[in-house]
Image (cartoon, rainbow, N blue to C red):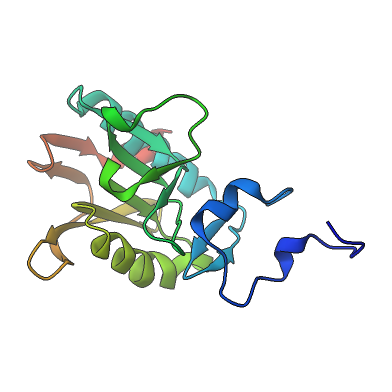
Length: 192
């Protein structure tokens, strides 16, 4: 540490930060992400964000086969300079390597879920899906507020193009057969 009145991580190295750097930066704000070698800090979350994550997370825990685990706000190392933090991830149980894990690998993740907020629109709609697809994560859901309701955009990876294909847009009910049988009443958000 230098005598500067601000943390060393405030000024990035010329080549940008690397994924493993996040584990060694003192006083880094919670939920910091690394996108293209640059630190990204998250704004305070809305009630919608919290409630929809509770709803979807609880449903996935209830519905997922025993070989999967649901994690909230855990970063995923996608490459040397990419370590985003999806709002929810569905990981293989073999990736559950203990309570001191700070990140998962892309190969550990079956599904990444992002809830869009005003400050994250471009990242959640464009950049993060590109990164998740390039890393081979099979499923991606983008959740958008729609008044007091939620709209869920469901994507599946096309392995030939390494890009996501839109599989459906869901408003009141999220009913899917992949990656497993899913039936979530999205209108429950009104009761939470």
